[in-house]
Image (cartoon, rainbow, N blue to C red; front, side, top):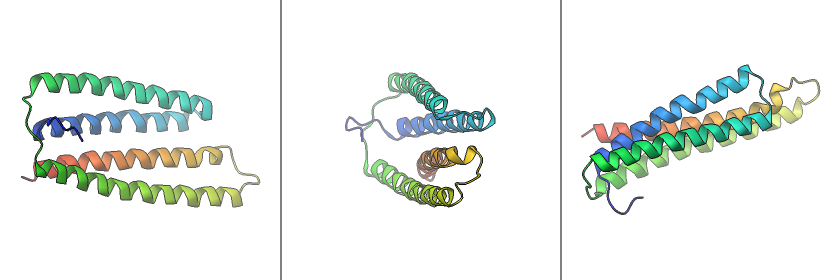
Amino acid sequence: MNESGTGTEFRLRSSWACLVTTALIYPALILAGILADWRAPILAIMLAVGVAAQALVLIIVHIYLALRMPQEPDDERDRQVLNRASSIAGYVLQSGVFLVLVLMITQAILRSGTPDILDLLPIYTLLAVWIASELVRFALTITAYRAR
């Protein structure tokens, strides 16, 4: 958590920026990967490009917000909102990890004669679950701040 205090409006706008960039970049990468039948090395490169693109956009947005918005001290509500959103997102991520384990076991059982996409299915599934977890965290943060 940022100890300097950024305030409710800064965190709200930051969460919006994170929600939008996550919702646009990573699902597009998954879809492109599936449609183009990307293999692991290209998928890794595209994931790195996605992370770099999101980081660059968020750096610019956060610099803009920091310069335009007054500093406010963090309060107890800020901590509660962030803790609750992170907690619920953690449950989504945990469920996804379990799902990936089930898929990997199923893949091992069905290994003979399966198409190549099944080799990458656990990777795509874990990536999709990570995206869902992040989207849930940002959306819950926004919702909790708006429920004043």
